Image (cartoon, rainbow, N blue to C red; front, side):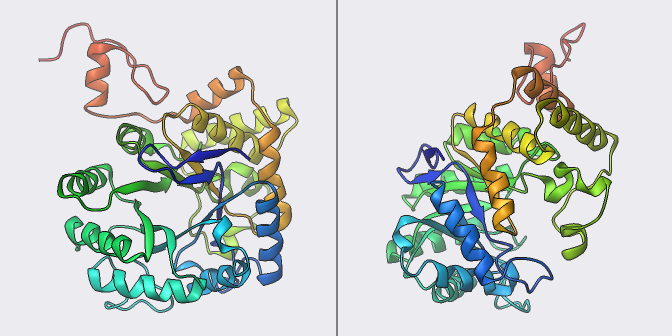
Length: 349
């Protein structure tokens, strides 16, 4: 597995895939027990994996607990990241959200469960709609200065909020935000509009969750419902809810037959090629439920798709960029995102 620095604003070195551990534990109705989690982690480690992604909310806190048990002997060889906002266990106004109070409470609880005295990357899991970004950034800065965390980032925040947070930290001398996290795959490329260009411009490291659309891009939901669709009652998955997503799955299945690979392998190979073209780190988060699933993800490291296949996948999955991108593209020519907009007959008024 290749190693890269996490964006252009830090020397932190991470593996090209991150191990997502939302499946470490069984309290959500599906996942891996401790022994299977150990096998998954060992295989990830053997392949050169270092970046681990978890959250205090995953499996009601047991994901962090299992990781704490598994990492006790070799914590320093991993880049350990976790998140706050949603809390572990039953939600409560005082134990959720992004307030300074909850950030301080959450990090201490996560450190206890993880059995460590610091976290490498600490993420705000999502905006709560209430807490000013200044409060979030200053609270994270306090944790960096206290040595509780080394770096901080924002997950599922819109581009304008991230940009404001990065700018405030820069202007006021607070600890910089080093990364963003959001969903990205052949089935969900909305980030092409704002989030990815922002991350590339600001040099932010990027971790991408749901690289297989929660199972949609494996093709398995065309022949059955096993997986998140049943175990997690449909949470965190994409479905064929549009004509475009049906075309994406059709194209993916065709490419899989042509290459002799599985649809999941083709999907991950496309994403790996997309990451290779990015000027900043794009790190897919893989979330296996078994060691066999982990092996399937790792098999992609030896797979390179032909340019013709990549182009077909690019074209079928491209999203309309909307305004002002289309107006600008109409005046100046093609824009990013795999879509060429025809120049208008006359300049816009």
